Image 1 (cartoon, helix red, strand yellow):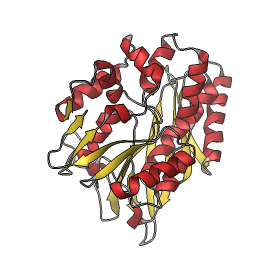
Image 2 (cartoon, helix red, strand yellow):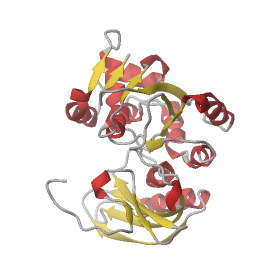
Image 3 (cartoon, rainbow, N blue to C red):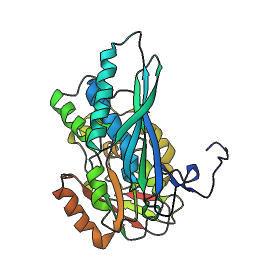
Length: 318
């Protein structure tokens, strides 16, 4: 990170040098702490829903690492002079209710006055040191499973532009507030090789992180990727967030698209997600069973979207 050397010690099992979803610090032979933090500006108009989405998004990194979140602290930037304090109360209540759903206790936080509203949380979880899931353990022959559909960044752009209808706003909100808790509980019973959650870097950005340094490549089948149908419509209209273009510029050298993968699908693959699903790399012999169990437990749009290949550290989208 910018040539900076960060201090570390033998207790740091996952740190900044690994660029993973969260940091992990070993407490004992049987216990390690997982720590993460995330906050952002509103993506929906409903303050309560925004609080829920921000909380679900912050919790997701703990689930992606295979851990159990236990405590959280609020992070708030609020324009006191231009916004009613009732808005902040609704946001905080949304976050508290989502944390309660996750059996997480909010034990504090910090707020500042700012010209732009921002909200999120710092979350601490527990894990056994021998059960940590990282991005960097993919194996040739693994299947790739995605648990939530793509397109939230594009649809949120449509919401900000005032073109998304209320039923779609409600539907996408329900997807974003949905915890990855049950998915994480299910995969803990399988021999998962690696895991991450799909957020701001988009699907291909996060896959690129998994591939880098692994000695493996990936093949992704675009027809199998779960996508909000409306995201395709809005992407075709040009309602693509700036983050998608930044993601493409950063990672396009690692990606080859098949001739039939059109511009709309390419944009969706780079679309930055908010509170997206888990991306799971698992041996092929277990993939169908895991997928079936995920679907039986409410992840009805989960799908096997690709496979880990050899030898080049590159992603092919067919």
